[in-house]
Image (cartoon, rainbow, N blue to C red; front, side, top):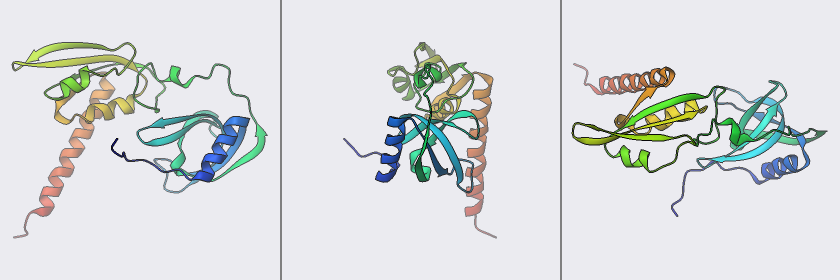
Length: 205
């Protein structure tokens, strides 16, 4: 099997997280979020380990935010197990929170209906996989070629957006409006950066 890109986790951190999960113990650590410039202290109730795209994550209740969050183990520093314990909610089931779609560990608060068209070589890729529990795939013909529309429900908006963008010009989001708008914004940004790079290479006369 070929090697994949991965986010390494220090062995000492593994031991801390596993002990906290096993004993229902609160843990503390410093964490750099995706939008943070500096690490911030966190105090959490660890619920479950999750694996996605070569990286390990911890689903936990953040005491400061009084809400569940997902933390990348690779970005956790100075972790420690406290003496304080907690009770895992009886109804906790992470799989029930992703809107019955299969796009990894990250999720949003609202479940929506998604529709995306796929063209050319992306057709087989989109059609042969199961992306969600209620998935529907419909074929249509455009310019004499078979294309497909994939439709499903999901609460994983950001991951669905990444999914559509990953097929480049062979994917076209149709619904919901938020997905279409975000996809267009990314396409426009790529165009602007491409044009800026071309202008930077032009010789000065």
